[in-house]
Image (cartoon, rainbow, N blue to C red; front, side):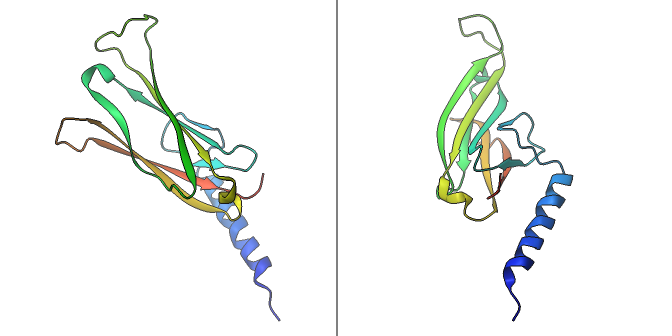
Length: 139
C-alpha cells in the first residue's frame, strides 16, 4: 500500500526550496515588496513598511487579507523628518503589523495582504500593492 505522507513531504520540500531560490525573505519586515515573506511558528509576526506622504492626503488602506489566518495589530506613520511638527511634503513610512494565528501553522500555505495607496475622497482607486506571505509549519 502506498503512503501519501512521504510524497506530500517531498512535494512540499521541492516547492519551498524553489520559492527560496526566488528570494523569499524570512525577515519580519518587508523593506521592498518584490520578495514574498516567509512566516514560521518561531516568528509569527509580519511587519510591512511602505513609503508614504500623508501631507498629500494619500495613505495606505488595508484592502484584503485572510482573517482566518492573520489579524492586523496596528498601523502607524513615522515621518522621515526630525521635526515634531507635521511638515507639508515630508515623506515617511506607514507600518502595518500583523499576527499570524497559531492554527495557521498546521499546514504550509500561501496567502496575501493587499494594500492600496489612495486619497480617501478621490474616485481614483490608487496604487495597489500585493504582499505574498508563505506560512511554513516548520522552523
